[in-house]
Length: 238
Image 1: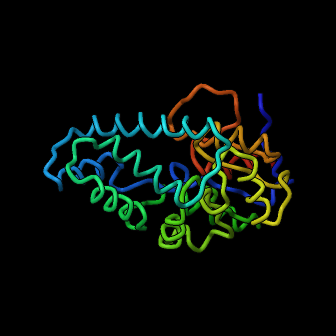
Image 2: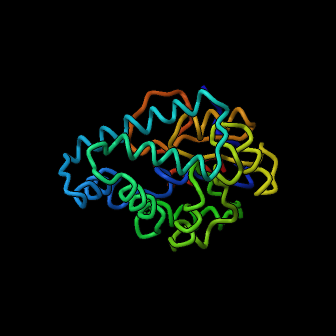
């Protein structure tokens, strides 16, 4: 079994964005379904959700065959590819892509989970630096800075398209260390993806915890059900 983090050593925390700190509101399936409706195409939301999950995952696997390198242009074409596969029925895919690209780049299209604000307050009160580290593109800066529960609390922001590598590549986590000005062994990574946020971080020398928001996935890694439990684990060790 993987070890619990040693809180006496932790001086910085890197938190994943989507699924850890923020969620899309309305949901991805709702946003895509409505985008299709604007073009006169009626689709079943559950079918759209299933398509998105399938094509998003297959695109992730496609990336894993390489070395996880990325940039702004790569991310733009990646999302163009995914949207086209999820919504093949629409007559004007370019317009729909532009609408959805803009939609998910706006702060009002995202919402922080309820546990985020109290957890970030407690982390800062403990004197621990906060980094948001995400496989995203530059749109995330506008999103993070536009959400009051996040904007005040973030000491560093590491985005895959800007540093040139996606998680779980070690270079992504090296960028986290550089931005926080800390060695890997003083940083804890917390996220909802076992490979990207936990295994990848640990291979790079960071401590890691899986955020498992009720998914009940089988694994043998230290985990917490929400971000307030993250602080509970710290207090329990104190």
